[in-house]
Image 1 (cartoon, one colour):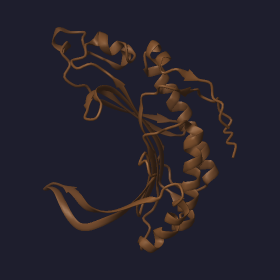
Image 2 (cartoon, rainbow, N blue to C red):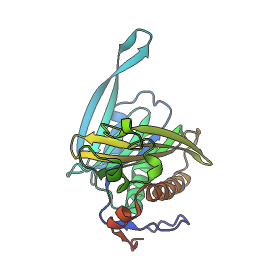
Image 3 (cartoon, rainbow, N blue to C red):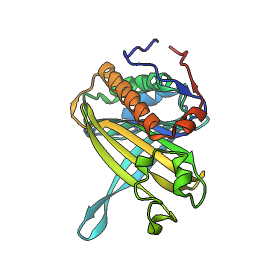
Length: 257
């Protein structure tokens, strides 16, 4: 199926630093959420996501006395590819698709469209409370990185006081969360120098573009919104990264439909 959202086709980064991509839809609580209700969704996804895991998550409340266990459980179903690099998660109030094997937006949105349609039918979903698209990028960085090291990764504006005063020379960790209003939702940008257990030290660029305006679920409109989120996040990512480093990701002209 050809997907044309009327937006410029962003190049595919052959050596992208993308660590995780997540799309999530939140919806009003589905009463009677159970194995029987989810079974049709499992059948619809079986050829692409054959591996199944069921988790019962303990719910907690946060109050003046700290964290209190409520005694209630939330059941979460996860459907995975054999390679376990694509995961669909569905609970009583949320559906998500995540991957560590991103192959480009049109591949991703095609999968999301099939999953969302199956979930809407199986769970009889009518209304959405939140729709978001998140990209987590990890730029490899040395241990004990200096300002000069980090300037080879990201723009100067992101580094703030790092390395510009005698007391801010030896950086141990940096992390910042910024939230920006957009004309079609909001964008949360988390960034900083941090140790990632799997990959050593990195400069992380984590973008979450989302809309929390409640509205009826219309899958075509939803996919067009996600295309906008992808396009605008790509522009923000390209702005944030050092030009020479971005070129090293080997942008490739798009040839997929």
